[in-house]
Image 1: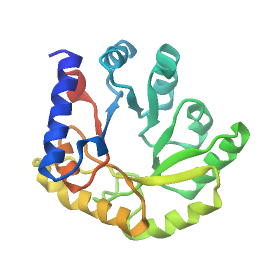
Image 2: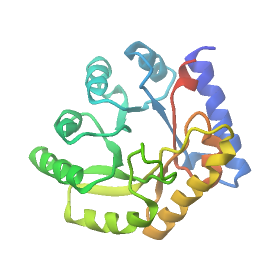
Image 3: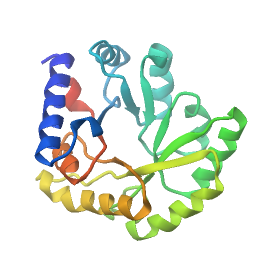
Length: 217
């Protein structure tokens, strides 16, 4: 199938999942993860009418931005090292993976220099996997409070990378945990759900679903 057809099929599934959950489909955004896509494929995506793209690596973001520019809205969705902050800030409109104060400090330092305020999502390790980044759920409210000292960071929501599972339903408890945390902390944006489980994530309250290979396969 073409990227255009894949995109149409995915959007239909998002609409169906939203309506099944009693939600407005317009409240859910599709973020296409560009990790496995070439710049040419992303240009095809944009031609098909989709502009919200997420990148995992600083070098990939810069290279693809140079080819595509502001035709896309770029989010950074991968683990961000402090020494890469300066490299990504000129290009992104949102960071999905803030999970420690040292990163927040470096972001603030560089944002001051370019006079920019950055919307950020706090990454939460809902599955408690030691190999994953993210704040544990019970530590998240206090971490969010601590971010108030950084005026150039605008905390808009939460993100989680759920576990690789056999059944999408296995991740429902993790998505519910994130949704409950969002309610507790008064945040509206929930970035959760990938190609394997995005319909379950929508049922649990996702406002951004991150899909990659399914778009380009």
